[in-house]
Length: 341
Image 1: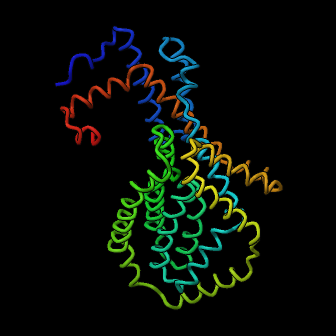
Image 2 (image 1 turned 90 degrees about the vertical axis):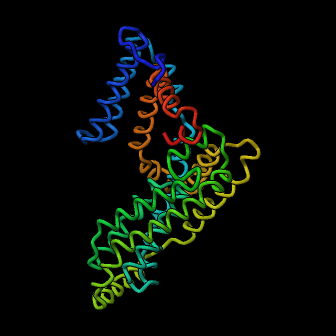
Image 3 (image 1 turned 180 degrees about the horizontal axis):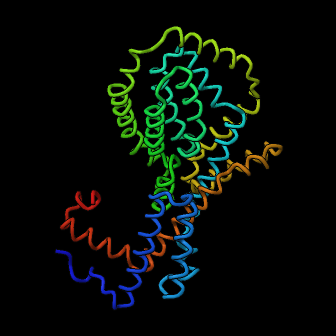
């Protein structure tokens, strides 16, 4: 039985505030799941409504809302996105993708499995949002060229990106938030998460091969593969790659990754390293800076800021405390059951 102190009395000001926040959250996420508007529009409207309700009823002030916004993960996302944008503009991922097709003789099943591993690795080192947006068009291009059903391929890439992103503190936004909030270092996150993610990736790829791709392998057309392979080889031969700039970007990215390992011992945070590295690259490649900055996804940044504002309303109204008390009561003091709940 849930203790009585976790109950909500709507006639009490605190209970009224919690009920208002609950209604706003339900309304916001209903609009989001029904896809009534763009996701950023939905969440931002919910955040504005939360701020208005908080000001009117006095449970959420503007200063508290600003305190609720966690800038560290946003700075990491911006900094690492700069590297992904540079490599996309320089067509590095397109080149690597087509080289993989050539190296594997356009065997689509092998291409998918290698691409999934590449997506996972890149998601761990940059960030999974940028990675999947950049690499997905290349794998869809290969799937269509070999008359392969692109739907399971896209699903496989997205899941591989999520698994890979989970392996490091910079791989996806929740990890960035956890690392910046708890003070976990890049190495600590890697030691605990990477082995698990490697195992899960192996299990997932085996599952996809067993349930989806091995059946399509039986219907492969050697003639189609040869024609597509020739087409890709011709395209790669005509690609004009700016290798000096690509090497420069990869070198600075490598330095940033090394800094993630070393600099936290000097109390330098991941956000400072990522943002500093990204803007150092912009300073060195100043002729591309304007175009790269334009490509940084302000939509995603606004989406995450609005989410922080929504969660802040839930925190300051007392809703999160009520949820925490309910979970504590439901776990019955079991330390294993509590995190699962």
